[in-house]
Image (cartoon, rainbow, N blue to C red):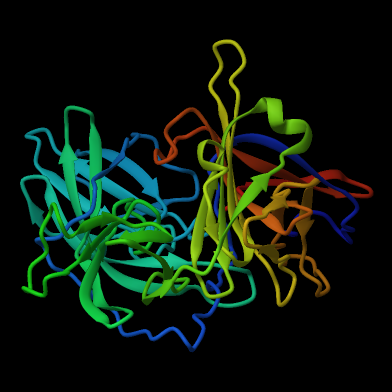
Length: 417
């Protein structure tokens, strides 16, 4: 939106409404810092023999309005996908598979997430399979730069879908120390977000110290609480999933999630909690009574799926914490007690405008925000079950700029992530 129209224009009124489109954020920032007492002695190893579970994208042929394609095309059909690689606040990565009449394929990745795909971003591969480095991005608030971790991602094109699958290559490898034992361990990324240490990721521990990982006796499903022999331990990960330690379990409590008046309308939810030591704990509707280690936690992200009415598709919303300084609320989980958390609160739609004076001919940057009273901000929302397809019928805000004398001066639209 710019202020080139009108003479002596005054900014009088800005109107926001929802529409269908794609979302993009203009804010960057990092996840919470890893506490110094967690030794960051784990390293990422792009071992091609270790790959995570494949994730599926369903491309469309229509280009998102904010995406610029600046590479040469040769009468090819362009199949476009978008996905997030990192946490829920990370910026989308655009992907293009260009298919010619003889079914030859070319693959492009918007690796720097600048919404422009150029000739230089062509990825070399063969027979519809590619492998390339991509950074996992972690955004926490809008005050600091994001933190990015190098990963290698494997891609495979299936024209019959058409669909594009991807998975993280390699693992995080390091030592775990418990009591008098020290083991070599590795963790694989099973949910395809570039972060190691999420619930459900693969945890491998070389218990017999033979330098190998047995798929039956030495593989566990990553969880905040692990059973090793007759003992239970607390597995603590740094907030970026780049360091780990194991400690004896000192106590357990539970979390009760309250959604107030929306309880009957919510079909599914998941709240991701982050402890002061960086430990990530997911709490969902079907596992709300699962015990978690005692400690203090804050809300990192919230996912909601509303019950579909009639034959309509369900609405899905994803929020994440965008806290500044000490704004986050910390909830204490005590031994053998239940802690009540109300993650949503009141929802507010607002617009951020520049604080500097606006002059004639100068573009105006307006950032819409849908946030909650608990400090969460919306990342994206969509209808249907497929959160990874770019044309997911997501909501955007329409912004109208009015002048006191001329009426409507300009309009623009923007998304929320």
